[in-house]
Length: 387
Image (cartoon, rainbow, N blue to C red; front, top):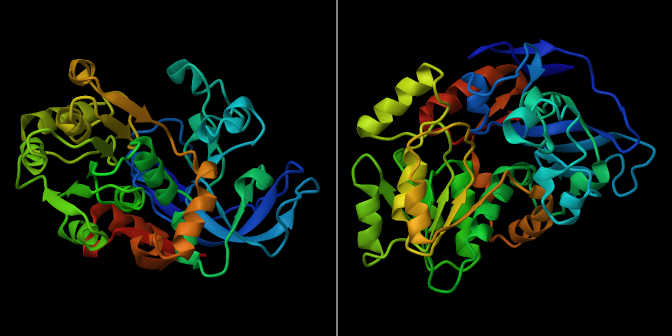
């Protein structure tokens, strides 16, 4: 089959690789109908996540049709149109039973790799380096899906392929961030980032009852999409974000702040220059402008939800969090806990994930799609690939 492979920093190629096969009786093979880029993929492409190997197939956000089924799979069958969360979960361990699916104790086949850094293994994830399981990704014609009865969700009538695609990762990640905020009537929620996850967090906060949502970014087309969803927008290159948020909230600050940016945040001033130098010299992995702003902006006693991917950051204002009494919630997405609910919101038209699909490419042209996505050319919010 054809697949998009990582071959080194900023070196992506579409190659012929072996077709996936059923390995365990709970597996299925999916004919990938759509897959998409994700901002966290850029950390792999830029060499910020170790343990990638030449030839690794990329792509962790996808949907498709089941074409082969392991003998112990009971809940899905050949021909089903399904969406699959990006984290692989067994459904039976203590963490899965407590809806902490991205912390699954079973699905990581190489726990010795993340344990030295994290102290424990996370769940496996498609196409996110061997430190996260070494699973082949879905920018391909076919992909193997383990634990299919837990991880495959049938897409109902009335939900398009493109809507379902983003319920694999962007929508549940964003919704989880809003869910972490314990939104009450009258709450003001600030969201850093108007990429796919940030936009889904904004729409989710509105669904959950936020009175106002404030979106922070710098790209006009992304800010325009946030406004179309109903958010108030701030361009961080034109305003002092923390002061602007105070002004918008009567001096108190947002009730909750969601960081949907992560380790490659844009910013201004000396701190951003310092972060860039440390990142370039591999003395640190993170540019933390968005997270630092969120810490400073959130009101006393408020909530900070961190959805962005991070590694090692210095100059983190931990004392601010402690003295302000801020509750911090963070996780990789527990998608299996949210997918069914998100499909229902999408059926009713309350959630519109397909709005993220601004550009479409064949699989053969996927390197061009990633280049456009990375450099945010032509207003590219997400590039969708059609094997």
